[in-house]
Length: 240
Length: 265
Image (cartoon, rainbow over all chains, first blue to last red; front, top):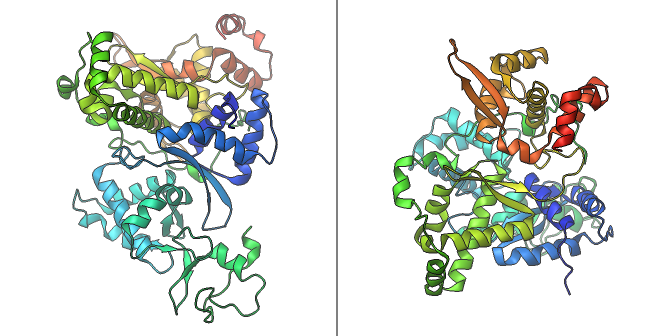
């Protein structure tokens, strides 16, 4: 039995959309706030049920509020994603042809890289090779900035990776386009962009998943081939 | 959850840092008027014609178009880009023109029931739409749906200035007022970028402001007024309260504005 959708649900949806993506604790705060404003039943541990009520109504529209993990810090995030693969996916109606091409090529670099990052120099070098319409480096820089602002990419010290929101939205698409190269995490089985890879058998693990998995182990071994895990184990403290 | 009303010019969060103007990304930039003919809609689409057309189309096809339209409208709304009917026809409806009115009605219903949003035609001559929230506004929460708080802070200041000046203000007065707040229209601002562009182009395109030339002025002078989106997303009462809070006075101190705000809250 599903609860009736109320203005609290609608307000939650509106605010979530204007943020694009929300971290778990922000979403829980918003949940409470929306319920209080509209005086509807609130229980602090019922956020996921609250979202299910919304999702039932979004399903016929090929949309969904999805919960995903940030590859950077391992925290849960919520975002409204688009499940339909029509020409009117969010990006296509929002960017010019050559901007989309630059994004696709950036995505290639990120996914084919070892660590899930592409450096800005490599991306900017693509700008004058675009088939649709060449870009000046300055323009490309501006477009990258917009991608970061619109939460498709995130940037750290001149290196770019896919934003959590982008991974949540495009996971299925990426897995089908990069069938042979995109990796899935051996622990949580979701797409892994930033990951550590076993040098023996090639399985991948998200950094937060690595941290959790090896937390209690003195001698880390690959969960798949049992060979020694050759990477530095990130501390669990930085991951929740 | 409360927006920082008292310090609207601050907010140096990285998200607000770049004040770009997206010209090429704006979808309707391609919607030149000469294309209108191909996508013009016969005004005489009667109910029975639509019904007959609907029978030819499968329910699934129509539903798919409806959800595409809902997504299209939501994406445009996120960027506060007003939506032209010709773009809806060209980019979403396409060969389903015969059931256009049914698709738009259904999309409107979904937006209302699921998202609490209303499709509003703000320009009946050129058929331009925006989405506005149907949910009761919460005190102190105006214009809050957007996360570009700093820009909206600047906008709030300009809207309140216009209201206090009797619902219309000369451009020179607006610029002078901003200069006193150390926002210089001619210079690149740390947070707002090109302030003049932001105010005269972006806010106008988003329908928060309307700027009209004052006839017979040389050099040309302009008059600033509220745009239709401003009236939908905030109110005179909230603007007056905002000013009163900054000036640390009671709203009733400004008699005529107070009466006007109370008359149309």
